[in-house]
Image (cartoon, rainbow, N blue to C red; front, side, top):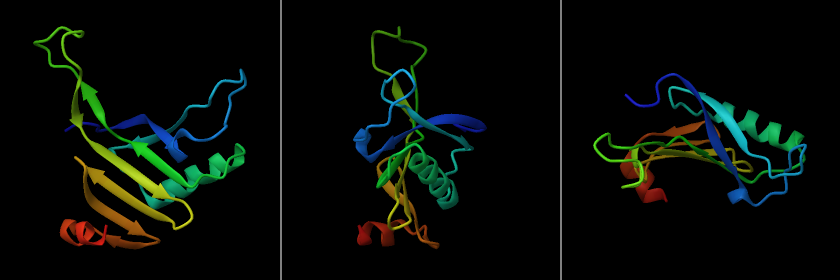
Amino acid sequence: MYGKGTRLVPVIVDGNNHDLKNAEGKNLIIQTEVTDNIVTLEKCRQLAEKIKQLGHVPKVLKIDLCIFGKRPEYEKWDYPQECLFDKVATYHVQDNHLLIREKGELVYSNDNGVICKDKIALADSF
């Protein structure tokens, strides 16, 4: 439904606690391209490696896949945008561990190749 196709999404590196700068000396905004809201362990590894090449050794990457929009019946300044699609991927670089949350609930874990999609088991383990 939401987020089909390819789009750029923001990546928060170590809670934005880094000193990466662009050519103008401003804080660097990290983005990555995702297709159909799918984030893989391999994608996360590649992203971490690119950030290392920029001069920062990341610990945690948070890939924000959320999509916001406004209800057509309201003027844009009347109400804040609502979250139409709520999904966040968190990658712990040192452990090679990817966690995916939808609507705040853990729905997927890939711990160095060991995959778990059981919501109850995930809730019990975290």
